[in-house]
Length: 311
Image (cartoon, rainbow, N blue to C red):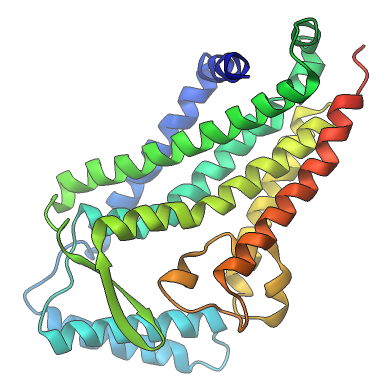
């Protein structure tokens, strides 16, 4: 099994486009830094109190708009509470590499997931199109082991690339914003109160709690890749579904029916460092719901893979 996984990883990393994808993630992080610098929100000014008070006024107006989405209202209320906490404590909000990395974890994993879909979408279908699947099947390995090795290799690629993205955000963010602040606390709003956890804990937990989106996107692409012979179809459909699901989960956040929408459970940070957008949703419910979807996708793709004729 391990040699098969190693072989799949070798095939992934020997392609030039894989390194292009890695470069795209690094460029994405760099663009986020440039965006923060040009927006002027990366450093705390001397009149930070006046700035926070102005922000609270702006957020209050946004939340009061009659056409404001529930997620916009929740985000505005969250920012108001956090800003008021800094004002009450007479402490300016810190801006450093660690804060930047925590704030970018979800965006990085989202970008990595879309890129990983390309790998997962072709990892099976391309073998049948090119005919190289025959070489794998002539070995002693069973189709089950081949199936699992390809899936594990796709997951490992996504995890590696997301980890590289987070580490790059720390490294580049440190040169721009400074590496100080690791001993600071990460503040969040839960039950209308501000809480704090160690910065490194917030970064690691935030990374792990956003991994479900990566798993869903890769497994979806892998399922379609195993079911059809077209790599283009696998990649395009998976990208569309993942991107649409991500947008719907944000736009419809808080609607009761999203409790049964899998993409509304792919960012679990709100269940740990916040409140669920829908009453009754717990971390256990979300994890079981995600595992159920992963199992269903494998129940579709695995039989199709092991029964497919090799011409």
